[in-house]
Length: 233
Figure 1: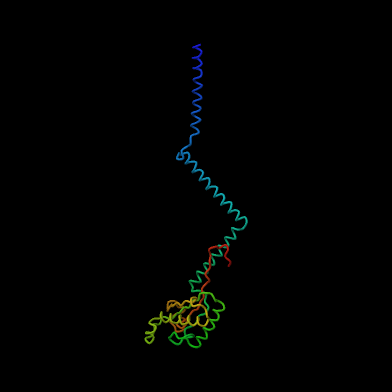
Figure 2: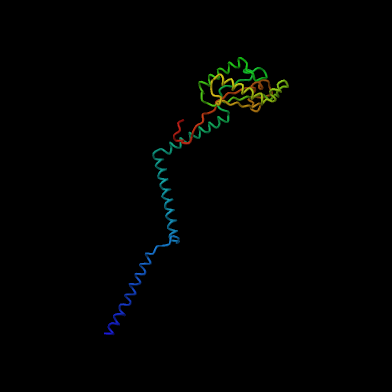
């Protein structure tokens, strides 16, 4: 009987060891994996790459959908229209706005002065009416220009240089236009260019007469291009 019991114990021992090993291996597989392991980091990187690929594919599908429905071309045309409009407004502003009138100095002022003549005031009345009717809310620019002949000694005390003379003529016209048109003073600006922007040669009397002038212009209307696809031209 002793020998049979010992044999039974010996036979059960490997089975117990096998069960114990399986239990240990199963427990080990249920243990949580550390988040800082290379395997987890690799999976996270792969997951992020897949997300990026998915987003790129979604954007590509949206693009082709826009092309198929014509929205892409409509948006492209709207952007081109916006660019053309901005370029036009930029060039117009560089040129000093859209010209309304240009008057030679001798048609507005007394000789070698910034005092309006009666005929000059009558001419400005017509311009004032045009501004009030056609450009009631636009910014208005008045430029004063002269030839390159230095101011004579009799005028030097009042207008030391052509800059002062052209500026005085421009502000005289601005003041008259405000009074005649009834438009807001903050719509007007006076600029003195002196002899810096000639339109003809100063070597002849005819050219100098053309250079002594006052230009009246209107500036483009400021626009909000924050939503170009909804902008009406």
